[in-house]
Image 1 (cartoon, rainbow, N blue to C red):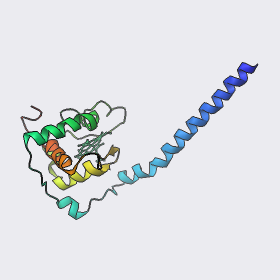
Image 2 (image 1 turned 45 degrees about the vertical axis):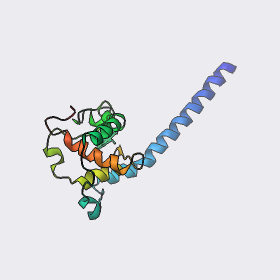
Image 3 (image 1 turned 60 degrees about the vertical axis):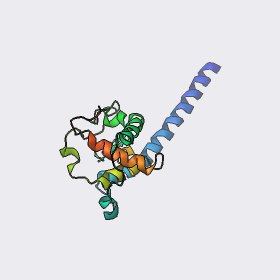
Image 4 (image 1 turned 120 degrees about the vertical axis):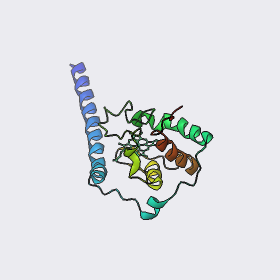
Length: 150
Ligand code: HEC
């Protein structure tokens, strides 16, 4: 009999835990739906920012290293948007090998998204320096060039 109570108790604790997880998922919802409603705004100053960091092989290599840790699981090692967790997270990705995928976006916009994140993408924030983030902009653009990744 004692065993039964133990099992019941464990079940109650487990379901309480589940309820808490569900609750926090529900709390995050508004953010997502806001992004979906197209309320993502980048100020004109940020849109107009030019890349102040000249792309060099060293700079691209440094960006590629971090890309491998922080970005490739979604954007794919070659920037094709076929990262490992895309299916499980139900993400809609762009294939950066297609020049058209980034044509309408300025460097400033890409920098802003890399810094702040967008929708289900988390931004780099200050985890990496501005220089590295600008190098990432160059890296992201490089995937549509023939010699990308070599
Ligand atoms: C959890 C998956 C995920 C990770 C990790 C991630 N991204 Fe994204 N990224 C996305 C999604 C999804 C979008 C499209 C967001 C939207 O438009 O709502 C996006 C958009 C972008 C864009 C804008 C262009 C486009 O394709 O829409 C850039 C640039 C970008 N990501 C770069 C990066 C970089 C650089 C990293 C690593 C520092 C990174 N991302 C990490 C999922 C991710």
